[in-house]
Every structure is written in structure tokens, then in C-alpha cells.
Image (cartoon, rainbow, N blue to C red; front, side, top):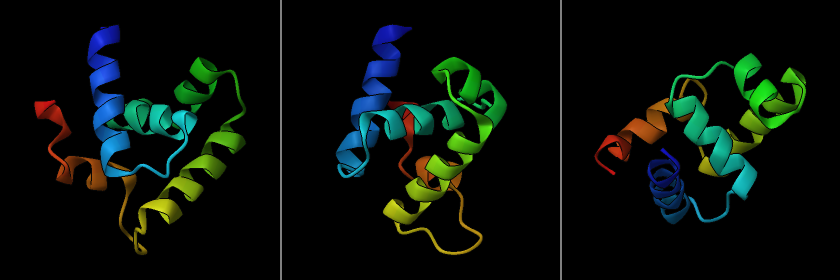
Length: 81
């Protein structure tokens, strides 16, 4: 499982190199279907912090209104990694 996560993290990082390690972890967790509440618990942060980080991730990814992080990740075909 750790190796799979590492591969996904590296794949996300290769497409979005300006994301921090923490932001990549949040992206992976979003892609894996975790809610903001679950991500907050896993990373020992508040839900508000997760939501703020998600907003910053969307900005860094250059997503337009209505586009989501999960959609951007699916477009990378990350499942095949």
C-alpha cells in the first residue's frame, strides 16, 4: 500500500511540481475518495485547514470555476499508475 501511494504521489508531483508534499498527499486522499473530515483526521489538521489547502491546490492547478481536483486527477489517468 505504501508503495502504491508513493507511485501515485510521484505521478501527481510530476504533473504538478509546484504542489507541496502535503498538498500531494491531500490530492491522493481526495482521489482515493476520502472526505475533508477524513483527510483532516488522517493528517492531524482541522477541516477548515483541509478546505483552505484544497482551495490553494485548485488555484495552483489553474482550475476554473466548476472544475474539481478529482476531475483534474482523473484526466491524468492516475489509476493506471
